[in-house]
Image (cartoon, rainbow, N blue to C red; front, side, top):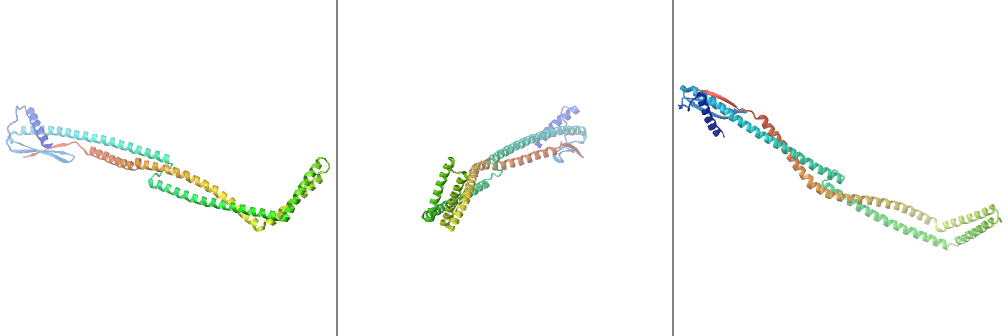
Length: 323
């Protein structure tokens, strides 16, 4: 570019010098002395022009050199303006890329926020989600096995209680004292019905009816005492213990079923989150890394364009004479 610049500047400068001196054509040159023209921009030499002239024609050489300086300075300023325009365009493009990168990053973050909100968790990494599913499945299996054992024990205890009660009933049926006491209770109850009927007819007083009721109560109490004796203290204690354990087991089973229901609900939700984790991996994780990289590179391009714009200064032209 400098070689073509030299030729263009020299041709235009010769024409300017001729006009300034009102010469129809430039004088014939004979090498006798040299004038150097050094072009600098941003403290760096861009080019150097050497103009030979004769000592006897210094006016022509001076006019030519000034014309060259003016032409060259104007040309270099045009180049400077073109460079500045190019840098400004680069900065505009870099700013646009930076804004696009920010918008892309914001869009990915919005997708991530939506997926997290839908999943009900901030950690949608596939490893975490799959581990949670595995943990829930293990807990469900443990609760199912625990409930299976509790229900089996519950049925076994119910069978033992039924056997104990049947045995006690057989003992009562085979106990002659209890049989006779049951007859007494039946007789007293009939007497009470008769007394109440006679009291309604005002044949017996209320006190006499109350006396009969007392006899019925005593007969029943005696029958109950005898039944307990016939059943045996050991059998009574065993049945009481089995009934207490059955109540505890019933509570444990209800509690276990409630826990199992909650675990099943959480497991179903966790399995739904697996697909969301896949979406998160595809639409967020990798695109987010790429978008952050693009944003960083866009920042660097903006800073580089700004640096170039700040460092770009107008060129200067210096003339040196060499006698």
